Image (cartoon, rainbow over all chains, first blue to last red; front, side, top):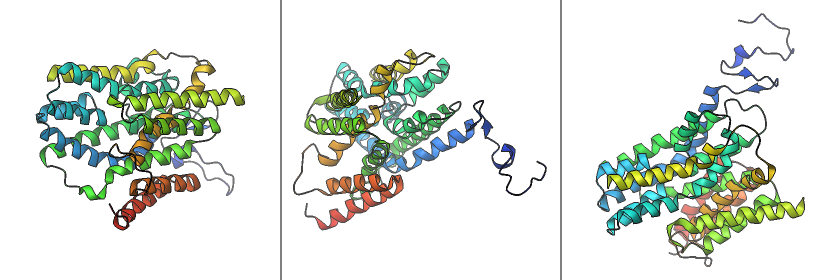
Amino acid sequence: MSPPEPLGSGIHPPTSDSPSTRTHPSGQPAAGAREEFLRGVLAEIPLLLGVVPFGLIYGVIAIQSGLTPATAQGASAVVFAGSSQFVMSQLVAGGASGVVIVVSIAAINLRHALYSASLAPHLAHLSAGWKALLAYLLTDEAYAVSIGHLEADGPRVHRHFFLLGAGLTLWASWQASTALGLFVGARVPAAWSLEFTLPLMFIAIVVSQLKDRAGIAAALVAGGLAVALRGLPLGLGVLLAAVAGILAGSALERREA
Amino acid sequence: MGLTLLAAGIATYLTRLSFIALAHRGTAPAWITRPLRLVPAAVLSALILPSVLAPQGMLQLWPLSPRTLAGMAAVLVAWKTRSVLLTLVVGMSVLWLAGLLLPG
């Protein structure tokens, strides 16, 4: 307990309001590991509204496509990337060869390299073990809610726990909803269109992070091109569109500088 | 099938690990970090727009589909309020209402 202080002194010993708050050498309070972790979990929770129905549907479709429950659940654990797992189910149903399946999944998931590059400067100080773990948990959904927080100014000693919290929350929900879809079936009425909450969440995240003309240009070029190139196989349209958007935004930034 | 799964998993994992593993202490030059700041806006927009404008692969601009209307409402609400929850509530409400009111 701290000694009583005169009213209005404005000084609160950190132990009295939050046990996990520590003071950073810079003088600003840094959020503790546990606090960062919980914030990451909380940030991820709204996305589960879209992810869980998606996982349920995946479980159902995987079984219908002829995957064994072990393979379907194994894909959720080993590949852990929703849209590529749907494509895998389709390919298996169509009798595709193993090579085609591996190349397709790898191509669809290439966009993660862009996330990896974007996160790299913020994780550079971590140990190899941390990097290996966070890379495994790197998904669209975990990246989307974490990148703004990782890029923000201020002390950053425990920021990676935010990504860990978001990533583990998504991981557990994806495994559980896959299993539920496999063994119980999808009980969410399709008419509710709950999967649509995912694009809505991404809209909220992107729009609230758009700060300058370069970002807006990148979003418009990437979005427009992705629609135009949606016929390309293996998710290559998304990848090409994203790269073009980044290049367009950078070019605008250079011209304005 | 197990081997296929393992290979696909390793390929995906290496993609995720790629730049994170390469990064080392010290600051990257601005010509690398600047474009990387545009990654969220670019990749997420490339994921969003097709699912809003062409959910089944078919582009439908007119008449406006429920998804397009909901997406437009969401952009507006997100822009004005910066609230994730409000964006979600308004977007889904517009989607369900338009689904009831619009033909098709």
